[in-house]
Image (cartoon, rainbow, N blue to C red; front, side, top):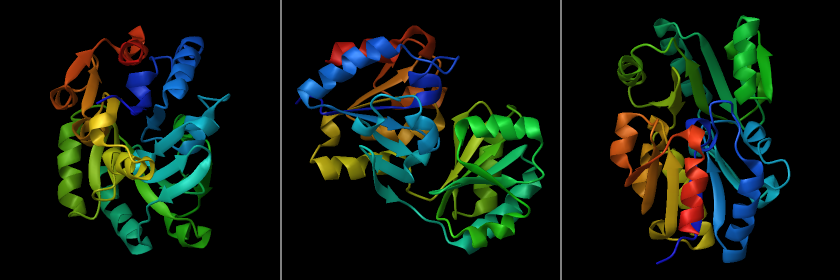
Length: 266
């Protein structure tokens, strides 16, 4: 059975450490994928508005499983978004504060939201991943925004992240699931709403089987996706648990390894 869909994580996988990729080479491969009827999907924890900026010429021909599966855009059209109850959001915020994260981002369909008190340097760091962003005087003001919140993004010093994940798991009591997204960042996702969940919705829409899916990743939020796909690849710089979940380990994100493997698959 051949491959009908290729899904790639971005940071640390498709993108190099300078947040770039070989655009000319990708364009050639993308045209080959189109000719063969293979769907190319970006599966990332980041915001859709940020992700599409990496593909200025053809983002409307690409589908995006953004926000770890909580917001799906199918070739330029909104397809699906998850939603958290406001009380769950506010309750989680109160618990998160006890761990003293350096940044807390509420992720919604219309915008991301941070506290007005977030220092400017941290705000700029967050804004790279969430270009559509608003400051709130108090997080409780989120009610007035009438947005659909579906994820949290937390930042911590990059020390003992597994310990932070364990502490958050205990604190949140199953309301949200913490997953590492690399470099000290932890996403809090709705239980069951992960990248594999998002890809399964696209598989159903396109009548594609997981047996016809290839996926690439590097961080904890990629594990379900790699387990879901029949052809799964971890980059050499991936976390150990991610390498264990993948069928094959390829070169690092700085070596065009994902493009090399896509070319081989084609």
